[in-house]
Each structure stands twice: as C-alpha cells, then as structure tokens.
Amino acid sequence: MLASDLQIPLPMVDRSTSAVEAAQLIASKHLPGLVVADKGGAPVAIVSSADVLRLMLPPYLIDDMSLAGVMDESGAEEMWAKSAGRTIGELLEDTRVNVRDILHVDADDSLVELAAKMVYAHALVAVVDGTPGEWRFVTLPLVMDAILAACGVNGSAA
Amino acid sequence: MTIQIVLAAIVFVGAYVLIATEKVPRIAVALGGAALMVIIGATDDHGVFFSEDTGIDWNVIFLLLGMMIIVGILQQSGVFEFLAIWAAKRAKGRPFVIMVMLVVITAVLSAFLDNVTTVLLIAPVTLLICDRLGTPPVPFLIAEVMASNIGGTSTLIGDPPNIIIASRAGLTFNDFVVNLAPIVAILLVVFVGMCWLLFRKQLHYDAERAARVMALNEREAIRDVPLLIKSLSVLALVLAGFILHSVIHLEPAIVALLGAGLLILLTRLENRKIFADVEWETLVFFAGLFIMVGSLVNLGIIEMIGKVAVDAVGTNYFGAATGLLVGSAFFSGIVDNIPYVATLAPLTNDLVMAGGAAAHPLWWSLALGADLGGNATAIGASANVVVLGIAKRNGHPISFWEFTKYGLIVTAVTIALCIPYLWLRYFMG
Image 1: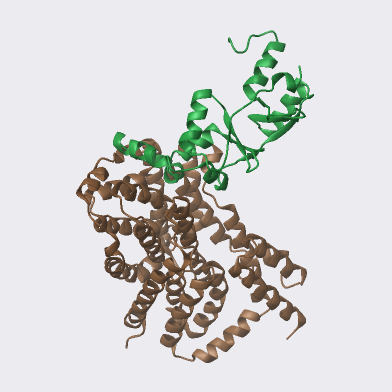
Image 2: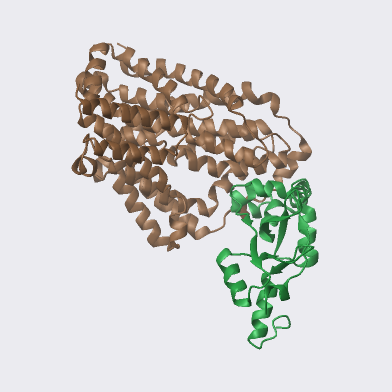
C-alpha cells in the first residue's frame, strides 16, 4: 500500500480563521488537527486539536492550572464567549505552542516509509506530494487503519 | 598596571555591556567571560572551585537551588491562588481593597520566595480576578511586581542580591530581618498610599461585577491537601533553621538543602515535578559571574578600587551610605541587580573592613539600593520583565514607559525614605 492509496482531501484553515470556526471543523469531522495554509493556499503547518482548545482558554488558566476549578458556570460561559475573537494567527505567534511545519511525503511512499516518517516528525497529518490538482493528505488514523489491516485486524471496527 | 589586569578589565566591562544590552543570552556572556578570565590567567581551577574569596560562592548557588526546589513543590499545592481569591472575596469585590490585599500578600510572600516565583504565582490569579471584576489588570500587575521588589528586600532569601550580600558579609537571616524589615514595612504602607494616588482613577466598583468575584470558589484551587501540609511544614522548618542559625550553626544553604531533601522524601514526587522550578540557567549564570568578579579580586583590581573608595569616603560613612544607596538604585534600574551586587559586594567588603562597625551599615545601603532600584524601570528586575511578558500574553500589554513612569516615582520615594532611616538608625549622634 502506498501513500497515494491513503490520501484524502482535508479542510484547511488560515491565520484569520477564528477559534470557534476551527473548533467546529475539528468537532464535526473528528479531526486530530488542522492544516494551516499560507496566503497562496499552500499547506504550511499543522495545529493539533489540543492547540485549538488552548485558543479557547484565557492564557492565565494555562499558566496556572489551580485556577481551572475556581470558576462557576456563568464565569465559564463568559470565558467561552470571549474566545470567539481569537484566531489561528495568535496560535502561530505563541512561542509556547509547538506549531509544527507540515510533513511532506511522496505519493509512492510505502506504508512503512509513511509510518516511519510520521513517527519521526510526530506528525498527525502529512501532505502528499506528487499528486496533481487539489492538495491531498494522509492522517494518522488512516495510517493506523492500514497497518491494522495489514496485521489482519479491522482497525475502524475495533 | 600589567597587561593581564587590562585584559581582565576589558573582559569584565565587555561582559557587563553585553548583559545590560541583552544582545547575547546572559548565560553565554557569563560563561564566556569566565572562560576568558581563565584563559588570560586571571584565575585558575583552585580559584574557581575552592577559593571562598575569588571562586564560585557555593553558599549562594546551593541556597538558591534548595529554595527553588521547596518553592517549586509548594506552589503545586495551589495555596497561593487560594489565598489571593480568599482575599478578593474578603474585600467584597471592591477593586482598591483587592489591590491593597494583593499588594500585601505579594510583599509578604516575596520575603520568603524569590520575586520571580512570587509574580508567576500571583499574576495569573490577578488576571482572573480582574477578568471577573471587569477592571483593567495593568494597575494591579504593576502594583504587585513593585510590592514584590519591596517585600523581597526584607529578608536574606527574598531577593538574590541579598543572598550574595549575606554570603559575602557573613550576615544572618535575623540580621536582615532586624535591619531591613522595619524600613520595608514603612515603605509598604507608603506604597499602598501611592497606589491610591497613582491608580485610583482606573479602578471602579461595580456591584454586579463584584458578585462575580464572590462566585469564585477558592477551595477548588487547593489541588493536593497532603502536599500542602507537607510543603508548609517543611518551609516552616527551613525558616526556623534560618532564624536559629546562632543556635544550630548551620549555614542557610545547608538548611535549604536539608529542607529540599526532606520534602522530596516526604512527597515522593517524580523528578520532573521536583525540579520543575529550578532555574538551572540562573544558577550557571551566578557561577559565571562569581568567576569573573573573583578574577578581578584575584588580580587586585577590586582592592585598588577599594583603596580609592576608602580614601574618598574617609570617615564620612553616612555620605558613603547615601551615595551607595542612590548609586545602587540608579544602576539597578539600568542593569540586572545580580551582577551589580556581585561586583559591588567585594568592594563594599573592603570599605567595611577599613571602617569597622561605623561602616557596617553600607551593607544595608547596598541591599536597599539594589533591591528597591529594581522598581525604577521595566527592565530593572527579572520580575518586572516576567510580568510584562504575562500581561502581553493575556492581551494587556504594558509598554516600557508605562511601567517606568510609575517605577521612577515609586523608586524615588522609597529611596528617599531610606535616607532618613539610615541616618536615624545608624548614624545619628
């Protein structure tokens, strides 16, 4: 099995995408992360869904975990509402967030090559080079499924 | 003057300029400067590692290490956040009363924890409280970091320059409390009044917003009650060890290390959590500084400057104390007060040795000037820089001049008040 056999299209976000829009994409499509595109629409980085969740919390709550429990329900609702104004661009500029450059794999990479490259790069998603037209990607769950299938186990059903 | 002395002076001044301008990481400057001192023969392995006068001051390094471990474990309990929210609720959500309570809590905590740790603990909970109050957090953050620099002045462990001074001068924890805590208490009262004058127009009471503060549940901040009890017990033992120095004859560094060891044994936390707050970079920076300053001592440069200073001072020790106080405040506002005090400590020692008991208050002038001078500018103390970073990250940037305009006023008033204190306490009659 090759990378081209596993590739799929994925939605991409850009710097101006709001935290709420990004969260909607993750929640509706059960994505492990989001591909960030540059001004020209080319994929450049990956933000994990945990990083997008970080955008929805005020930074002081991440600095000090003891504060997470002290807030009441109405305070929490106010906090979620405030996060609507934050964007993916803020995440990219936050030096404490490890935004990864997107991993490039070749369309003819074997499953083993693909798995090794993704592990080495700690990649949730990789962009598949060498396929004309729309950008195509492989995701970690798809690679896992293919490996399980090769082991004779039904990954998606398990 | 030998070529070695000229080269050592060039290395030292060059390193100082690089540290002040922050063009190169300060740890690289300190280690690079130390390496150059060894290469030019200004010091050697014995001088670096084993000499009490010209080498790395292990008392300072290990006292810092021990306290960093203890505080790092204690802060995981959530007790400081509990205290801040409890205080805000006792203030019934009135902004200025909350500010006063947070200022006092910060100053008191700062006397026992280092200033950076204190502001790292107090700033996030302040942002939460201000968020609930719907009031701008900038006045609170500025007031807290200044309170931290003032409160840290009062004890041996409150501010790193005090640790250096204590080690070089042979001063105890009690010496610091007896000589500096009274003036710090006065300064704190005056500072609260200044907060009213400087910030009151930015603080508005809103009953509805105050109710949101009252809805915070401070008990949820305590994450680990057994850890809290163990940490506070060990901290109390360590403080008792400092205070009982004349009875138990254990140096502060040993007391802190024993406390850290005991706490590690009691809590059995994983290494990552034990050493989470140890700033290895700071400890290595200190080591590099001590080697550089020790090299100047080794070559007799400090002694030469000391002789000039002794001749200039004569017997006018009040004049010298005032000059040292004001000069230290000025330089500490511009450069990091740690390298400043590391350099001035051997020089002050020469003056005190020459003048005897009459010159001894110079140590307190150096401590007051260096510690309080940190408030003067946004880069005057590490804690200031840390708070500016937290404020920016949370969408409330504080510009250099916004901080400095308040800092200059607070520093001028606090330093001015120290002059009559020094006169009344040590030189009158």
